[in-house]
Length: 227
Image 1 (cartoon, rainbow, N blue to C red):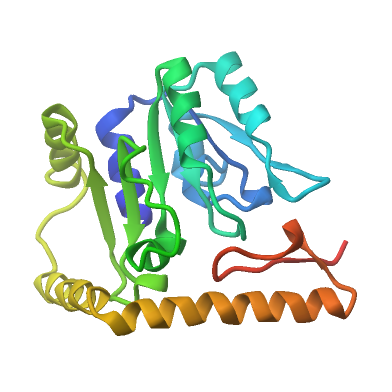
Image 2: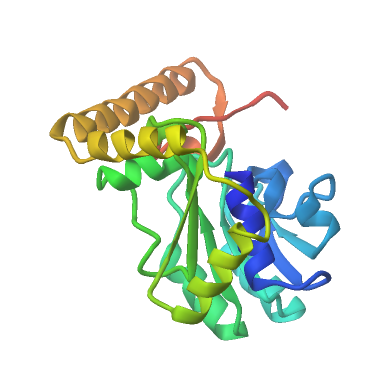
């Protein structure tokens, strides 16, 4: 997943370009511009976060930061956020400032494949995911993009020869099995049960007086504030 993200940056950005991504401290990912990551060292990373009163992404702040900093790319995605991303709003903000919209759906790809979480592909210029996590496949990455010959060429060149050498054929075969499983009816049943389990767990913690960030969950993730 991180390698896929790095390839997207390599394909569409130059060193020093501005990116706008979710703060690691607010649920983002290292590769979305954290200073300890290459994404925060090679690029001018501006970070958006949550409304601390609601635990939800502050889209007004995202828009304000985008207008102020004019990023070349806006990154939508997370490693620890329990609510649903508003992809149309992200698209509108990206269009307003002329930025690429890059969605990292690694943590919810299985839910997206099952039709239980909004599909970002109609809104994003580029989408990445891991093939493990909720997609249940081998550890690896995947890059998806809407039809655009220029972006396709840049992505292909960024992966090879830009960042990788020979392919791992056994992992490619395992990914094919993973994708086949995702087409089966049982896969949707599994993902639906994952969400039900997460919601049930969140309700128990809320019932016992714990502060569940954002008041619950729409996916498989749940966070408890111990502050």
